[in-house]
Image (tube, rainbow, N blue to C red; front, side, top):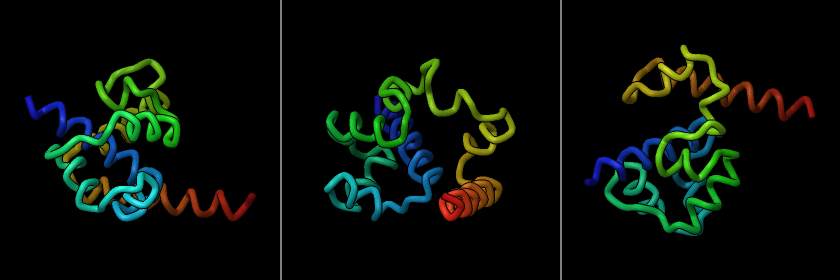
Length: 113
């Protein structure tokens, strides 16, 4: 039964990393402890429904995606398959490189605005 908690936590973790955030940043945004964020990302605990609603708006994904991992409008529907494959892997060096690249791209894009 706790597999769903781990799956939800992994999606939150992926979205957090894709947006260049640390657990500390997310904890501050959600007004909770870093320990609670860590526990929720590892499937030990869940966030409140209000926090999941906030995250779905903040990250631009559906609540259905966050909680169930499926939706026609989920964040992954617009990503190319090779990127999705990297993101779905367990913590890998390739995933960290991709996330670092996305963070760098985001910073460059924000500088151009």
